[in-house]
Image 1 (cartoon, rainbow, N blue to C red):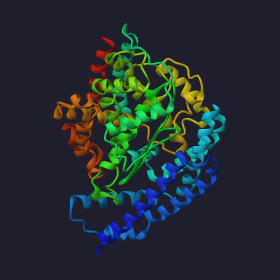
Image 2 (cartoon, rainbow, N blue to C red):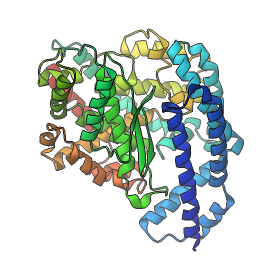
Image 3 (cartoon, rainbow, N blue to C red):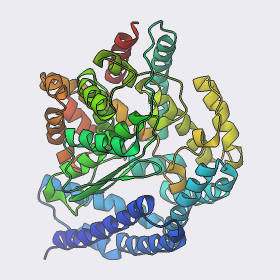
Image 4 (cartoon, rainbow, N blue to C red):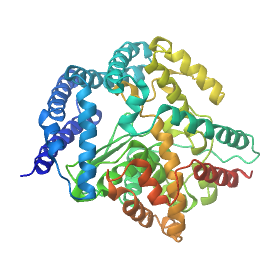
Length: 490
């Protein structure tokens, strides 16, 4: 075997073990007994030790030096392995193992604190996580910006300064649109009633099927914070249920189907290689957000959903499809990012981005986080946070060490805006299919133009090739102004 063959064979085993570790995380969030948290933390720590040892094996450096890739895909695989080898080699094995152990424990501590509205029970653990993430960032940054080093894990090549510039460009139009919408004379009706859990879950399965979710390679479960997990032949989704708000369950499901379909749509030849996963979280979020918003919250699909919900729940207080479309897209100053309307969603992300940059840099201490969050939320949304689960305890991300992840949600929205324009141009009869509850024309276009490539190209190149234009926030902002201007009669 050649050095290149040896490298890929070794990588194949590493990828398989990484998938096993991911499945342990899925199990912890869905079906693991609560009393098993300490055991699972040790298991995750042990898995990370094995993975870290493999990812820093000196033979990788030797194989990389001797490898002679022949194809574009082979060259890209070598590039990604070399990148991972260089980054992982900077992080001590002890630190990687401790982070895996602590963040596994922290998930349960966060969930318990959230349920009890007790941030004081979680913040000491968050402080420990933050200290380890700062240490990891310092190792990765090699004298550079700490936050950039963490962001690079989720959106390779992106920097905090570029994200900040993007957000500064987006904020004025988003705030102006929100003010116009909230001040409009025309205001959509709010959905009200009791919506039983089992009925919601049946309907969410129907929506997942409408978006082409492959049930032979996936499943749906409940979690405190919805997520997707897995790739290749096994990619699972989760959702959550609030019996007064079926949109929470339905759109969480569609969102996670977008993530999972990306992983399942990657060229099968890339399985167990660095190309066999989503290229970045920004591109990943472009799939979940376009499924959820431009497709799932569009007038055509909500017309179909209105009929299904009317049947499932024996009538609704919203009595026609046009009013239902407005209700689905109702803008309201709520607390929860995952439930936020399209107009305000990115403002939630901007808040978290600024706070976590300050946490990593040391400008903000965890003991002052709640006060900083609440003050910023009041300033940005004009509403005082009423309880911790609607404030600093609402998201799981910091408990599991995902510092640098939040801005990719907004970046994904920008990418989705670019993709939506190209999709509409190239699939002009799309709404006719969506009105029948069939998203196949859209999902096939996304699979062909985005998903199948996996990690073959850098993130921006994937989007620019599919969209036929440079990445810009303008298509997203134009779409939002047109959509909500029509709904609210602006």
